[in-house]
Image (tube, rainbow, N blue to C red):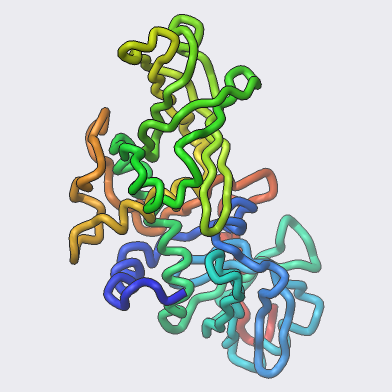
Length: 322
């Protein structure tokens, strides 16, 4: 870690400090969260815990309340430290750090008498590593909406900058793989060159597989062919616009595209408002709000097990009672 400047770290903190990120399986995978290496420390003892969500101001964790934690919290005036652990996808090394916090209370987790969902409030700004890891994620999510229609023409130089393995890809049309060439790419879609007849391809649902290097990753993005153009002097070839399906775009793909846009912004520009030189604006539409409202939850997919408002009925730890 430590790639971003202190100025950028500070900007990410101010912009997203109140946004709560729910750690779904996809979020954990994209961030490299090492869930088995996270624990709560109180006085000199530690308790394994499951992190449910976090922002730059606090976190929610699930802990066994019958493991002796409650008396320790009372002894420590509810002061704790939460150990985070992530795996750096580029270096392959673990990044660990503690964040000092105060326990504000807990509520039964899914009605369990044994497990409580604790609300922690950080007592200081968290590690720059946490701000960088989660800030990149939040930045990609915001820019994927704001810059949805900005296309990047795929050239040899762009292949290198994006770490794309090749401009040759595979597109699955009704489950059948077809070879194609990637012409341009964006947060919201891609244009491909493929052999075929327009009338048999237009409005068809498809899935495009895009392969990246450093680190090696592959994403399958679902969408529908919405527009088509013929290729000059090649009646058997067509250029198809694949509009990605809303809500089905992999978070890892968004991060990859956002990292490219971040590298081409003019010096000192950090909010993504400038148009990049390699981008071709198309169907951009009106720009949405740049940042989610303070206090909003951010999650790719809460999943069937996620609670919408954990901690609403939190039990304060006061007067020696839990």
